[in-house]
Image (cartoon, rainbow, N blue to C red):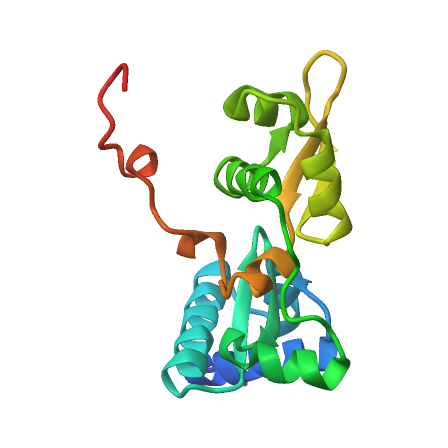
Length: 185
């Protein structure tokens, strides 16, 4: 006689995800979580959404952070000063205007090559990019499939943490991204 196994509830999946991420101490791939929990992608997404909502709505000290196909638990941005004090870290990194411009370009257009960054900014961005990499806000994530195979750059989970974001979807929308710019603007 075979027993029909009940589908786990979204609440129980969210709790299991929280436990797994807490113990792992590192970002996990969606596929890895899905296999560990033996659930489909829709159930995983529902569980992730439920967990993120629970953590934020109950003003918990941790948040669910998503970056690409990875997810992890991070400290709540509003508690950054306490964590920095505990770890003896400076509260913020001082970035030049050029570095902030470069970071904005990467944040909105990632993955992106150095040449593409410079085309948007109109100036050489070597020093700004090096500074962002040194601060752990940007990293090389691979190579473009074009002539010369230039390096591709993307923001890091540290970028999200420093700016109090749980995913890139929380970046402020621009007129360009809202589709409100007219041709030629």
